[in-house]
Image (cartoon, rainbow, N blue to C red; front, top):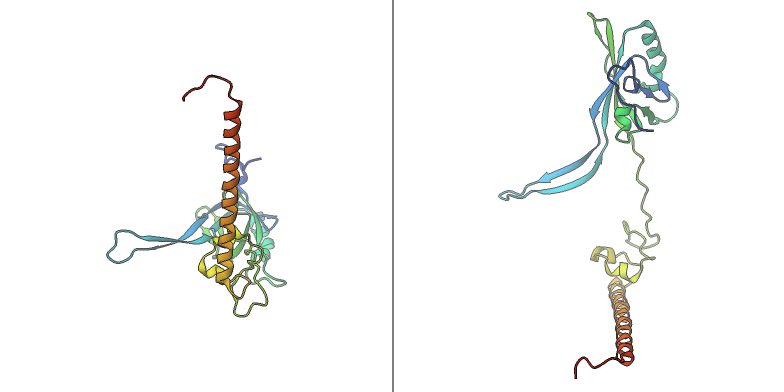
Length: 228
């Protein structure tokens, strides 16, 4: 099932409610902020008309959930739930909180950290209090790359021992230096030769098939000669 539509004319909808940390928060909520984006570094050399663009990876979304409170029950509920998100809360490691709201879930934002709790503001004319919760998207840490062990001076080298000759032949010079051999140049050279031999053998097999088919056509033809 898709996310709920805000529904013009509806008394209340999923867009008006916030579930954070497994709890329904009081009042009417509005979620705003900065959605998913890429962190890009744009550098233009002096005197050049062209700029170099470097993609520095994904940048976590930043959200703000504003709760509009106007009843005593809203105020009482807020005070009960506040310890769940208070930055100074005691006990255990800080954990991300699940968020359920269409504005966040639309972009696949399902878990967040609470970063700040601005002071609640009160509109004296309407008697509506606004409680804001500032959030940042939580994403799992990337899995560490398996490193080769026992290689002297090989810090930062990935395990290349299981590569095929074709994959080794495509390595950069820096990557070839990480090959599990005392002479990485010979390994790379041998890999190139091995890949070449395989390609040549494949071409030879194709030529043999073509020759065989040509011989079959010339011996099976019983019709009149097309040319002398």
